[in-house]
Length: 289
Image 1 (cartoon, rainbow, N blue to C red):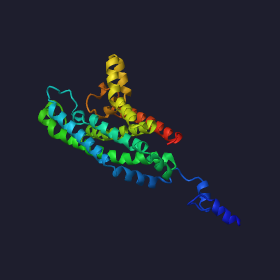
Image 2 (spheres, rainbow, N blue to C red):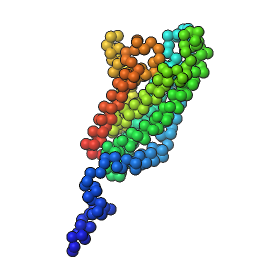
Image 3 (cartoon, helix red, strand yellow):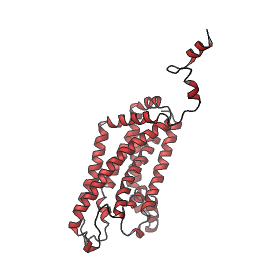
């Protein structure tokens, strides 16, 4: 038997001897990213819960903001921040975004599909990057719709409740720099919440555990800080709590009174998300599926 025939028979199924040198030469970790993105987008858009969760996130965000804008009155609450009032719904909509991000990761473990995914995309960094990229696209789109709707509702409703130039308030419009920063920052906030949730889900792999951890960080941690700490330490605690720090981006008035600045607060949340994604990558990289 010739050496060529032996080489042909010893090659793995579906790979010729001519292919092997290229494989051994070090293919880029991102070589399969386009196919991975296509696969993740197909999985995400063909699951009915994705659309429902995004619609609920948009409805909760806009609806809560509109209700709050229709209740708060000035001069009774003339120290309030109109931008934060109109964007109150982000605090509720983030829960749905977190659940979506958790489901994107943990549903594959619960069904066993993760083995198929990692067989088709052996480089686990690429698989996680594709999930993050597709999730980023849908969350930014939904977040933009939700935030714009909330600002529009506030722009319509708040002037009728005393938030006018006569009481020292400027127009709630995206032309105003601080309002634009609050709106754009709120969209980024929702994206960072999605990345935080995706990272935690990749690390723990259980839907219930991941959801509990994420919602605990967002809602329970601030309550603990406000109940067990004195005012001095509560303020310090708020500087590093992911939700308290991240939502500082919505403030447009009395910035010097904030525990942390708007962009600094969003940076704190970004650090939380980065650590979570790193933990998720490590779990996906080193643990068996």
